[in-house]
Amino acid sequence: MTKAQARIKEVFSFFENKDIYLGYRKLMDCAIDTQNLDIYNEVISLTDWKETYPEKEDELIEKSLQILDKISKIPIEEYNTQTPVVSGTNLVKSYGHDRFTLGPISINIHKGDVYGLVGENGNGKTTLLRVLAKELKYNKGSLDFNFDKIYHSDYDLRSNLVYIPQRTQKWYGSLKDNLKFVLSNYGISPQENETRVLMMIARFGLWNYKHLKWNELSSGYKMRFELARTLLRQPELLLLDEPLANLDVLAQQVILEDLKSICNSINNPIALILSSQQLYEVEKVSDKVIYLKNGAYKENESEDNDTITDVKNYLIVEIDCKCERDKLKQIFTDLHLEKLIFNGGIYVAYFPINTTFPLVLETLGKHKIDVTYTRNITKSTRRFFVS
Ligand SMILES: Nc1ncnc2c1ncn2[C@@H]1O[C@H](COP(=O)(O)OP(=O)(O)OP(=O)(O)O)[C@@H](O)[C@H]1O
Image (cartoon, rainbow, N blue to C red; front, side, top):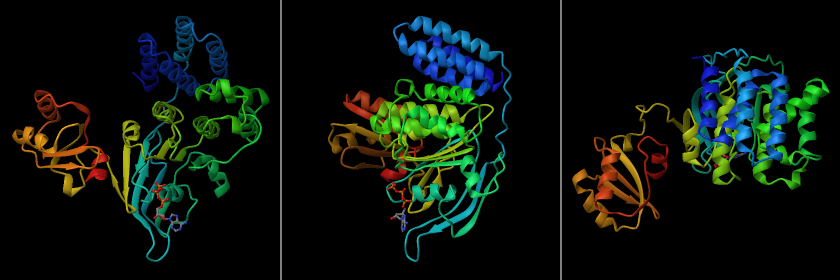
């Protein structure tokens, strides 16, 4: 099965299981992969219909599957993502003598992959993003881009590589007009411009907001607008600084899933690096997690590649429960608990590496401990934050 067929099969299964909204968003990604304006127009008409008749779910599924069937007949060429789009070697950025220093960092970024950049405040996430975006000059090392679209200047580079900072700028006029303005710079016909813009508006759930102005949008929708604007330019590398900062928990998951799916395009994949404090959400969608501590970095790439020596021989479990420390220590005696840290709200328990998480759960259950939250963080960058 090709990657395109697998994507289409997945959409069928979402609709079959009545995951309509996820299915519809993934349908739009399949449509975008075709780059076929007739398909775009069909999706646009269906989006308009769907917003007019939100209650007609069965009909929506039927109409969506008809479009999906058409999409499945359009051949899609698979992009080869093997060569990295960005290679940084021993990059060092220093803000001056005795000030903060980032690196040395060596990094290879591939299209289609999502890289999560995490770390506590002030550890260099923004600095790294700005170095990769060529907004900041680095002091040592080398940085090479391997874009498909040839660029002759740093200005040209801006369409291959897009950096969205934490605070975005105010714009004037309607959301839709602003998006159309982006494409008008690329010499596209007015009709194609309209179609491409409406497709992107539909994809980012902006259909009912397209006539609104900047100050009429919530910050979550402003971020969606920024993403739509950026993706219209079909960048090859996308650098996002804290895109989740103003979103509620559900919106964070949706945006991350959307970004992953869009960056995973079959014929037009994008390399994405995003910084965030939302560790779990980011870990869930990231192919690689880069953890920065005082400007030095650890790649949480492979499950076996455990580079932190002080925590490497443990099973580490976070537990939130209303239970005395002594009681917890006592019930975990048989599991040879090594240490139990209480960091204010939550316990962090360290067991020998041959202890299993199901065994910890079983022990908690057996002693009827009322657990409100627990998680095995042995392989999560979370362990760096709590150790
Ligand atoms: N222009 C600058 N001049 C001097 N020092 C700077 C400059 N910009 C950032 N720094 C310092 O570099 C360090 C890293 O900052 P950076 O903004 O990259 O961290 P961050 O991980 O993105 O933080 P946050 O999560 O708070 O956004 C901080 O100590 C900061 O004070």
